[in-house]
Image (tube, rainbow, N blue to C red):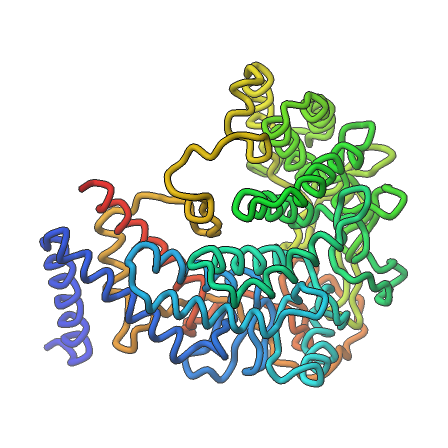
Length: 534
């Protein structure tokens, strides 16, 4: 005789299969209505039961007893960087444009209100916003932030704004998108403040620091404070140029052109004579170290990314000076490829390269926590940290092909889509409506089976729960163990005092903004696909 639990499971399975079969057999219009209903219910749950004053973190336990952005957060906190509040605002706007349902626009406005509340006096943003204010945020930095071993950017309270991880530029982009949607003047003051912050923080040479206004008060293990350095890491410089181009296209103000051109020229000024780039440079335009696991070095990944951008700048301007910087980068990348016995699948280059010898530099760590742990470098490619791996994927062949293609293009064809070359607006409507500023504006083509799986995954509380999200050790005090161990050399997290996040191996379920965004994006793109097929 079957056990009752087995019968129950088979019954649920049968219902699930039956539901899928019913959905598969539905007409396009009926399925699309189910999609819209699912999107609405899932969004109502996120807005009503998850958000804090309209803002979001990344992961939550279902009972909301613990929650995380990139690190564990207080109930009064929200996170800005992806997939936090700004990304949620973007996906709400995509849902609004696709369905026409004003509810999504109102959800985006709530996210914007949280973002504006957290805007710093200088006009930018920190990674997170704490609605309990400065007193609470400083305590978080002294406890949870301070003990995140591999997250040194959270170990010190600067009290200023960051460009790291596209935080300030994407928050500004979202406000620009929301302002342009209905030309609602209530968003203009915060938008102007953000734009002026980005313009003011640009160095005369054209680059940007990681944080602004400048602070140099966090010297760690003899490493100087790096946050005022010229920064390429996490696309700091490019994202600011990109945002200013979007402002030029949609706001139409000439004042954006000089900062854009200076930003593009900075890529040439900062390229070393060997063809490589470091991911940050000091005020003498020399390669510099940053976090203690980011030594003074050239980076093949940064070099390849910047070479691709030179090709883009050539297409924007028609000026061959940008094109001429690419062969040097290609030659250097060819010279620094790892030998075959050192490559690991698509990881063909070392993450760091010695600026004097072109030899690989490998980072390692010893110890067990932030207080009693350290990073060091050598030429041994074994036991590399998993959170910042010592070998990188570099699409060198793709770069070579793109260089060959673009170098052959006539200048007239090259400039036809330039965003900064004078030309009449030849598209439908006005620039304010035509240009897509949404970070989720790209499209893919999901099939019906994917859509049905997402619809059926929404539980009876309208949640999309996931397993194996990022969790962390609760804060229990500063590190105590002084042992020089290699036990945590390759792990994401150290001992129980390390508050850095790591993937939960258990079957614990989580509410996840990234899962919500992925599922919404799939449903949105399916609706767009079926509309285009009409």
